[in-house]
Image 1 (cartoon, rainbow, N blue to C red):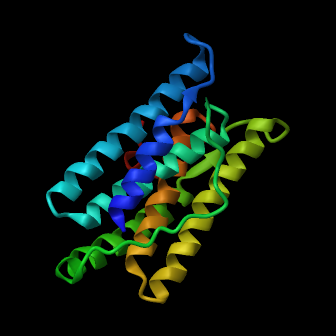
Image 2 (image 1 turned 90 degrees about the horizontal axis):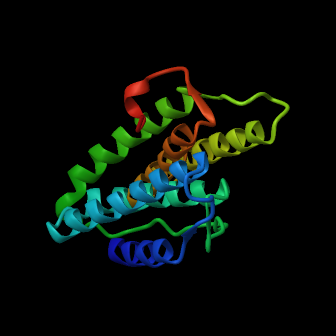
Length: 188
């Protein structure tokens, strides 16, 4: 369900505290990541309250991607990246056409996003390995979404596409990627 995902996201967001010292470069990245998570939690809530459970679900899953990428990068205390999620939801039969369109569009978007980034740090640095892990998370979410879509689990597929895209977008914002493709699909 979408609202339990929202409630879990709100609880997880409230449990984190910025780790970087105030005024540091990483504090700015942390603030950006947490602002994006908060914004998409708010947007998803507005969508849910308006009956658009498709956009709500995508917003909550995308926010979780940002939250987990930030946790992986060590931007805050109080969160580790979970091993797995249940990103299934129930959007209802009246929203089926919307769900089908958005799921197909987000699959294309995540595929394009994975092809549009390249690790920016030198290959001999720990941040290069971090960039590779973030890219792997994006690709793994794409594959997982495609598997769900093949099984006609479109809500779960949309959740995975949104989640993976959140990881990549956070990686761009954190500076671990150079954009080698479409710049307009990232939050920069």
